[in-house]
Picture 1 (spheres, rainbow over the protein chains, first blue to last red):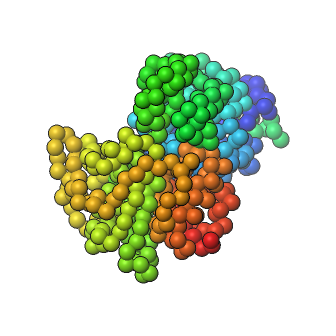
Picture 2 (cartoon, chains in turn purple, brown; picture 1 turned 135 degrees about the vertical axis):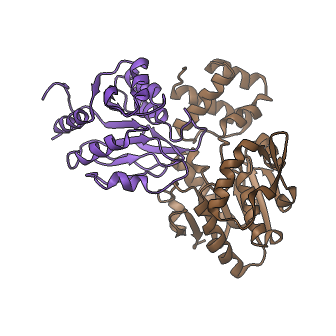
Amino acid sequence: MSKFNLNNSYKAVVIGGSAGSFQGVVKILSQLPKGFSLPIIMCLHRLKHVRHGFVEALSIKSVVQVTEPYDKEPIKKGCVYLAPANYHMSAELGNYFALSTEEMINNSRPAIDITLGTCAYVYKEKLVGILLSGANRDGALGMKQIKARGGLTIVQEPTECMIDTMPKAALAATQIDHILKVDQIVQFLIELDKQYR
Amino acid sequence: MQDIDIADLKKISEFIYQKYSYDFRNYAMSSFKRRVLRIMELKKLTVDGLLKKLSDSPAFINEFLDELTVNVTEMFRDPSFWRVMREEIIPAILLNHKQFKIWHAGCSSGEEVLSMCIMLKEMGILHDVTIIATDLDVNILERAKAASYPVKNMELNEKNYIRFQGTGSFKDYYKEENGMAVFDKNLLMNVSFRKHDLVLGDIFNKFDLILCRNVMIYFNQALQNEVLKKFHESLFKYSYLAIGSKESLIWCDYASRFIVVNNEEKIYKKIKD
């Protein structure tokens, strides 16, 4: 069980995903250990003009209620956050969220690069970044920033992805520490959680 | 991609404050950083180059402000918000006042103002409402006054309008000219566009309704509280304040002087002086 060689220095987990990532996210959230020891910050591509439904759909099977944070809401361990529709979501020094309505990036708002990049800035080497299935290149730059600041990078095994453009773009952009199937990502998170118990 | 550290960002905001009296010192750091990096990229400038340009060419400050402020918006953004405006908030104001005043604080390129005017026109009360629309950025105010937007934006705007369940036909409000949708200027007849700085500016009037949606998200909490204080002072008692759907007042001291009228759409009512 020590193949990931983990420790308890991590402060947050950030997850990006797009087309084909929904099932994977649902699986991860449904198998998380109760009272997971870190905040999980998710940026998933979604319809810009549908405010409702997504967070509810993700929460149905999740062990923890997923919430879309308000601007300036503190980031707390054990909570699972989802970037709200039509807003970019950043982490800020001081451990809280900031939302913005800036231009779309990679045709996306929320953009995964913004969430991953700001988390990398705030949490540095104490961050785990996970990028799942998706049909565009959003997230590759964010993963690169996570790696550059010493964080741990994981992408979903491209062969398992419904659309592998996103993990492949990250693999091309930077060093990825682990290439894992969703089941292995779950195992990773369970093992990570154990470090804090 | 270049990066910029907090010390440099502070240097830039301090310099602008000292030289031009615009205060970005309490802007939310993550978005301020992205905006400054964006300008540096656009203008091919380093931090020192940017400081030098700000120092040497005073005309550059307007361009800087135009790029720094976020001017991305859409008409009838959050259609459900506009339905609540039409069906609950405006009727509630009309119960006590036949004529009333609205302030769009941080109006950007004017899409929200225009949405308001279309809604008021459809309610038959456009003549009874005085609207003041303000922004820090003079260039964007000119664009707002022109009420002319790329036709390609109209698909989304019209979709929002349909979901708002407007009573007219969206296309009747503008004419297409050279790829631009030029809106009927009569819609804006009671609107006055003015330059105003929410951070350093004074209270200038009292209102029955203030809209400031997705503006304060660019401020840190301390500044949000300061601005909320100004809104509080600028509202009549029992008047309304609308903020963005994912903004919250709960961490502001002045929040206790308001009640939530509609939590989903983030509409507040001032109940205490």
